[in-house]
Structures are given as structure tokens and as C-alpha cells.
Figure 1 (cartoon, rainbow, N blue to C red):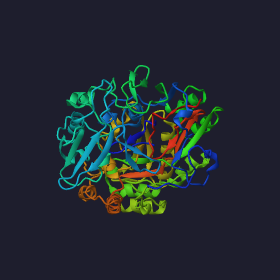
Figure 2 (cartoon, helix red, strand yellow):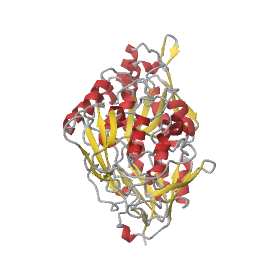
Figure 3 (cartoon, rainbow, N blue to C red):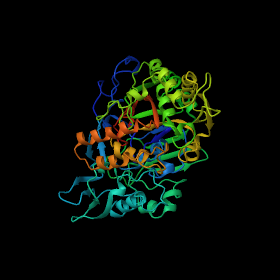
Amino acid sequence: MNVTTRILGGTLTVLLAVALAGCSPGKNAPDSRAGKNLPNTDYDAADPAELREGGTLTLPFEDYPDNFVLSQLDGNTGDTASAVYPASVRLFRVDKVGQRTVNPDFASSIERLPGEPFTIEYTLNPKAVWEDGTPIGLADFVGTWQAQNGKNPDYLAAGTTGYDRITDIVAGESPGTIRVVFDRVYADWRSLFFPLLPPAVTATPAAFNDGYRTQAPPSSGPFRIAETNADTSTVRLVRNERWWGAAPRLGEILLRGVDQTAAAQAYANREFDVVEVASSVDAFKTAQGRSDGRVFASTGLAWTHLTLNTSTGPLADPRVRQALGKAINRKQILQSVVDPMGLSGNLVENYLYVPGQAGYQPNGKDALTYDPAAAREILDKAGYTGDKTRSKGGVPLKIEITIPSGVTTSRQRVDQIAADLAEVGIEVTANEVPIAGLFKDFVTPRQFSATIFTYSAGLDPIANSRDSFAAADAPQNVTGVDDPRVAPLFDRAEGEEDLDTQRKTINEIDRDLWESVPIIPLFQRPNVVGVKKGLANYGATQFEPVDWTRVGWRK
């Protein structure tokens, strides 16, 4: 998992809408897909009966988690998700086109009750328990809600959207039922309560914020985290003896930390069974060279971007941000990533949807059309003049881009952007910082001018994005964008249960945001994954999460 992937907003979205043209799992190799749309699911599919019992799956991750509570601000990263997903039961199953169905391992039904107030009733599976045998129930819902509803600011939650709309959680009329009551219609209610947290994690702010930095929360999934070791940067998961669902095929999952620049070579050397190629051409070629491996590719939800601090320095002027949008040749950056891999890719021109997702509209197309002459004209009107390097009031127009040290792809993006901006008189420098502190020390506290990392979109654009755009003082709003029109529109969209109506409102939000240009999306990153041959039901997906009971080695 790429450490520079941040889970957008704070509500869980998987890195794993309508189907794109393509093949079924496990058919075509990516090198046959030049110029074609990628599928949204690509892996070696097998019935679990075809897989052998036991075995170890060894996976890389780049940054040992700062916190194993994914819902906590410091834990809201892709690497934390890699560690806790196999140990968490999902409320819903999601198919390859993003359609949800209730997961019977968790509940027999999850439905809206008729009438008012707006209430969702969960009828839980009576077999569902935490790894110590404690039944999953009302206290877990209440604690998860109270830690994330924003009423106690000492809880440093990754996001409050949706939880702040809940007014009460009570037992239902039938045994094993729980009712979640909202202050009004909340259309994105399906995004809530994953991961569900037990009271031990949510009882106090200290427990939630700091109690699970060196140990994992209790498991509710097919695996449990048996060992965490920050010194060796390893996390080991074994089968959860209390798991009540289908028995997993794997016996053990081992995650080991590795620098991004070394991950592909370590995979080629057979140190790992899987490698996420992300947007590195060198990693792709290295992964392709493994004789007992295969590279899978799908459309992704991740989009790489240049995030701008709108609250200080020259980027506080929206005209400078607008000029950047015109000066950066995003198509050239995209082609430098996908063309050498023989893959297709997309530019992103929407802050809340990605291409291929139902609702996507390229609202930012005009703002991001490559036009250096227009960029120069915007800067002239903003008072920045000069030939080689523009200045205003004697202060040169310089932008520092903060990136994690040692991440080759981030450095490549900086160099590409620097070359483009030099053409319009903007000087760019790179500020390389320790990878472990990128978010905690620089991005979240807004101690940067600009930065490059990757967001992951998801099934619920309101829950995924509200905290990032609707409140200037929210820690998730790393750009500091403050448009008073946006929060009321989010309020309206949250209450729109008709998807077509909601999508229109979401695109209205997006169009307003493009007037500010707080972020410059660079490209939608294909999901490209190298996998050792023989590993089934694990590969590249867009919406479909990994079903850890089905992953295993062929007999």
C-alpha cells in the first residue's frame, strides 16, 4: 500500500458506478491493453475449494502505522487499512461494479424503518463476536458513534461526517436489533460503522488516540493481528479462532515494511508475494520480470494530485492557483506513467468523483486546460511580473512542494511540475521530509506550501469528502479552502435519497470548488498489482474489496 495514499475525508473508502469495458478476472495481461479501457476487476478467480489449506501470504507496506485505529486521524492511511482490513468484519459486501448487499456474516438485514425520525435498523448475526468472544452489539455502535460525532474534540477522529447527524442509538424491539436514529434524512448512512470499534477502543480519548499505536484493536474478522513490531516494521495476522463465517484458506498474513523504491525489486527477488506498482514505470517493469509472477491491472479509485495550501503565501491568492491549473501539462504527466506500461489512464477533473464512477462530470476541464499563455495572463493580472522568475513587491514567486523522501515517483512529479511552471515564471523547489512524518508533521497541520500525494475516492462521495472541503478549520481540510456555499450544499446532498438528484447537488459542490482550485488533480492512477502465480482471488480491483476468506494458494 502506498503510504502517500490518504483515505479521503475520514470515512473508510477501499482502494480496491458503472462497469468499464474489459475482461473478467484473470484473462488478459496488462501489456495487451494499450489504448483500451481497463476492467474494474482483474485477478485470478477461483472457488475456495480449488485452494489448498493454509499457507502464508507475505505483503509489503511502506510506513508502519502511527495508529492501528483507522478512524483516528493519524491512523487514516492506506498502510493502516492493509493491516486492519483482514481483521474486520464488513457490514456490506461490494461487487465489482460497486453494488452493495448486506453481509450475512454481520447482519441478516440492515434497513431504513418507515416513518420519522430517520432510523436505520441493524439485525445482527447472533454469531458475530470480538476475538475474545464478546458479542458484537449495542455498546460497540454507541462507542463508535460517540468517538466520531465531533461533540468531544479530544477524540481526534479522522472524520465526523454522518456520525454528527446521529441523535441516538438504542436497542430495537426484537432481540439482536439496533436502531440508529438521525436528526434528519442522511442518504450516506451505509458508509457508517466500518470499522466498528469495541468499547475498549472508544471508552476515552486517550484510548482512541494513543492506546493502539503499538498494538491492534480487537479483531472481528476472519484474521486477528497476533503480532506488531515497530522495530522490525512487521505485522503478523493469523486465523481468528472466534471467526464464525467461512473459514479462510490462508493460515497467516505477514506484512513487512519496505521502502517504496525497493518494493518492486524485493518482489522480484521473491521476498514478497505481492507488490503494488502504483504509478512507477520502473516498478512495473521490475514486477513484469518475475518469472513466477503476473501483473494485473484495473481501473482505480486513487488519484494523484498537487494539493495547495490556500491559507498562506502566494497560493493564498486564487489567481495564482488558477494559473497553476493552466500551466501544468497534466496529459504529459499521465502519459509518462501509463504509456510505458502499455495501459490506459484518465485525467481527473472532479473533486468528488473519479472517471468511470456514476455521477462523474469533468467540471474542472476549463480550469485545468493546459494553456501557458493563459497562465501568464492570469499572473500578470495578479501583479506578478518578470521574465525568468516573476515577483510582486520585490518578492519572487516561489513554491515549495513537500514530498516524502525516497519516493521516486513523487520526485518525478515535482520535476515535471517544476519544468512546466518555470515556463510561466514560477520557481519550484522540493522539500523532502521523512516519510513517517509527512501527514502528521506537515500536511495535517498545514505546514507546507504545496504537496503531492494520492487520495482514494469511494462509494460515498459525501462522507468521503465533506470534512476535506466544507469546514476551513477541520483537520481533514488540509488545503484550508473556505467557500461558504459548500457546507449548505453538502447538507442538502446528505438529505437527498434519490441518487440522480444527489449527484446533481454533488456536482454543484464540485463546480463551486473549481472557482477556488484548492487541489490540482494530476491523473487517476490505474490499479496495477504484481502477484505471484498460484495466488487466487487477490489482484487489482476498483470497488470490490478483498474477501479474505477466499484468498489462498492453488493446490
